[in-house]
Amino acid sequence: MTEIIPGIHWIKLPMLDDDAGLDFVNVYVILGDNGYLLVDSGWNTDASFAALKNGMAEIGADVEDITQILVTHVHPDHYGMAGRIKKLSGASLAMHHIEKEFIEPRYVSMDVLLNQIDQLLLSNGVPPKMIASLSQATVGLQQYVVVTYPDITLHDGEIITTGLFNFKVIWTPGHSSGHICLYEPERKIMLCGDHILPTITPNVSVHPQAIENPLGRYFDSLNELKHLDVELALPGHEKPFTDFGKRIDKILQHHEQRNGEIMKALGDKPATSFQIAQKVPWGLKNSWSSLPDFHKRMAILETLAHLEMMSAKGQVDRLPGDDIMLFRQASPPR
Ligand SMILES: [Zn+2]
Ligand SMILES: [Zn+2]
Image (tube, rainbow, N blue to C red; front, side):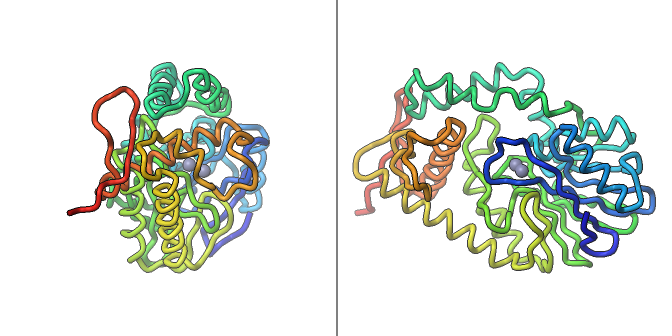
C-alpha cells in the first residue's frame, strides 16, 4: 500500500499468471466521511483478495469498511472481484451505464457473444479452420469473475463524492465503450483506468461490444482530457505518473504511426484485416506465426480499428458487398 496523497491509497493486486507484460492491477482506496471508496477491484482470486485485505489493514481498515465501489470498465481485471467485495461489505457498486449492458453477454450467457466474435473474425478474412482456437482464447476467465450488477449507473459529467473528495465522471470510450475516468479538479488528480497507461498503449479494438469507430472515439476522448489540468495520473496498471499531457501526445503519435504501418501493409491491392495484420511489424522480434492465439486475435481486431478510423477519415475505402470485408487505399482526389 502507498498513500499517494493524504486519503488516497494505492494497492497493487496480482494479475493472473498468464497476463504477460502486466504485473499487477492497481486499485485505489479513497477516504470518505462514511467509509472508503474503492476504484476498481482486481481479479477474483485468493491472492488478489489477500493483497487487498493486507493493503486495507495497512491503512488501518478492513474490506468491510468499503462503502462504495466504482469500476472504470468491466474487463475482468478491474471488475472481477467487485461482487465478492460488495457481498462482504454491503458497498454500492457504480459503473457507466454502457458497461452494465456488457456484464450479461460477457460473463453469464456467453454463447451469443462468442458467436458474434467468430462471425467478426470470419468476415475479416480469418480462415475457418483458425476460428476455433482464436475464439476460445479468452474462455475460462469467467471463473475469476463474481458476476454482480451495479446499484448506480453513471453518465458523463456526474459527480462521485466521498464527502472528502469529489470526482467528476468523464466518459472515455475507446478501450471499452463505457470506460470512465475520474477527475478531482481541486487536487488535479486523474484516475484513468486503462484509458491512459504510462508506458503501455492500451488495446483499442473492434469488438461486437465496441462503439462504432472505437479508435476514432479513443482519439477524441484523449484530446478532450489533454486540456484538463492534471498534476498526477493514477492508472489501472503500472505506476502513477505526472507527465499526463505528454503521455497523451505519445499515445496519439503511436497510433498515427501504426496507421502509417497499416497503410503500408495494405499496399495497393484490396486486403482483409487478417492479411494486413500479418504484415504489420507490431514491434515484434518473432514472427506472426509464433504469436499466441489471443495476441493474434487482438492484432487482427486492432488492425480493423485502425482501418475503421482511416475509413472514417476517407483515407481507406471499404469495398462494398461480399461476406468478407476488404479494404483498399482511397484513390487520391482528382
Ligand atoms: Zn481493460
Ligand atoms: Zn486492465
